[in-house]
Structure formats: C-alpha cells, structure tokens
Image (cartoon, rainbow, N blue to C red):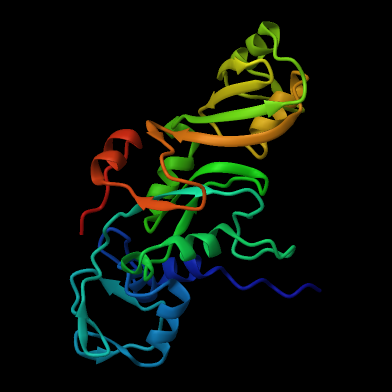
Length: 264
C-alpha cells in the first residue's frame, strides 16, 4: 500500500491560521517582507532567532497576526505584506521550476544572480511559466494573490508572443487563429489576436494560458514553431536586456497589470 503523501506546506499553514486577511504564518511573513528567502526563514525560526511579542517562536508555520511585534536577532522587522513585482527577461535554456534535472539551470537561479542586494531577501514566485526554449517576459512576485490574479482565466490578462514558424503565414491561417482552434480533443482555444509582421513570423495575443498553448495553436494551423518569445503581459512591454531584471513601480502594477497591490 502506498504511503500517504505529506500535505504541502501551504495547506499545513492554512490549517494553522484563521484568516489570511488578518494574519499569516511566520516563515512566509518573513519571506514576503524581504527578511530572507523562505527556506532560510524556516531555519531562522527553528534556530530560535525570531521572537514574536518578545517570545521565541520555533515553529515556522506558527500563525502570526500582522500587527505583532517581530524581531530577528533582536532587531525589529516589519512583516506587513507589501506587493513587489519584478520583470525578468528569460533567456532560452532555463526551466521555470525549482530544479533542473538536465543541469542547464532554472529561472530562479538566474533571477538571484541578477537581483540587487535590496531584493535578495524576498521569496519570489514565478507568475506562470515559460518553456525551456521560450524567451522573454516572465514576472516574479512575493505576493501569491498576484500570481492568482495574473494567471486565472477570469482575469483575461492578455499575453503577446512572437513566434518564428517553419512555414509560410497566410491570411487563412491567421483567420483560424483569430476564430479559435482545437488545441486538444474537444478543447478549443479562445479567439486570439493574430497578425504576421513578417512572412515567417506570427504575433499572437492570448487571454488564456494552457500548456504549450501557443505552439499547439500554431501547429493546429500548419505553422510549426521554431522559436518563441513573449514580449508583453497586460499593458506591460518587456524593456530589459536578456538576463536582466527590474522592479515594477506601483503605477505599472495597478495600470498595466490591473492589480491593486498590498501596501503594508
């Protein structure tokens, strides 16, 4: 008989806290606040280096009221959540995962190398995914609510891609993409914006993000993908060099990404 799987940490934490609106769990609050990345925050707590209201707490999943007085190594820290969002220009070859069995590297490793010291202490979540061979705009955030906002289909946040394809682009094929095509048995994509800036390049704007969707849509109309690049999400257009990162300002998060950020 298979052994029961251990519940994920987020589920364990959810069982410990009464409401995310009124509190959090200790290690995640430290990570969100930029004290240290999540794994390191867990170790800080377990080592007895964190106090809450003057008492040492050694349980990383301990519930935390966000107005509580928290100190690390005797120094006060503000654990009230503040939304931070990063724009990263993903190079080809990296996976959007915590580890890479093939050894080419992950987006998280590349992000850490590019971050300034002031942003190194945060726990960053990738907002959606890009395939290993896909380049372009990838967002990161310390706010799980923003991840849900930007990736759920109901938001309809557009994502614009440029694809170099291995066949001639015709108006007939573009019309099919605009109408929606079957990407798997019984599943049709939403209508997309599609145009051909060059004879072997398709610019495709989607409001959904199924697995390998761009490649499957293009393949469905006889346009095999040779290279794929994401250049925009919402009203945000990629403006940093490959491998570089910058933090978005609040107006970009509110306007270009239609999200009301947490402000501590």
